[in-house]
Length: 144
Image 1 (tube, rainbow, N blue to C red):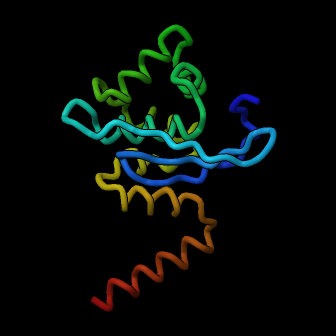
Image 2: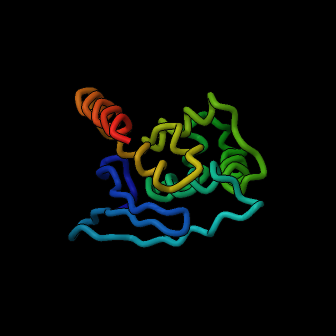
């Protein structure tokens, strides 16, 4: 069974160093552990997070690019350049990528892993849960 659109949302493990996604196959749920190269000056935070989100979604570079509106002939190369940090897309295209990967666009720009976790979790909440979390965070910041 391939990575189709009917698969459930991945369960993320968080770190720019490594992550895991929980997937189901035809027989039983399974976990995939994937190593993501450490950030270095040649790799941007945007590129590393884009790669993690794309791999978690089970999409090859060309398919993600086409879904986000790139020409079929250049889609793989463009996504590769974004992931490697050679180029960074404008915010409008970053929003299309985020939409296709079902992550908040802010996730791509989060400078540390803890903030990235919070952004992903926040993106999965409904409006009532978001209001409760914002209120809790506001009260928490007033305590300090």
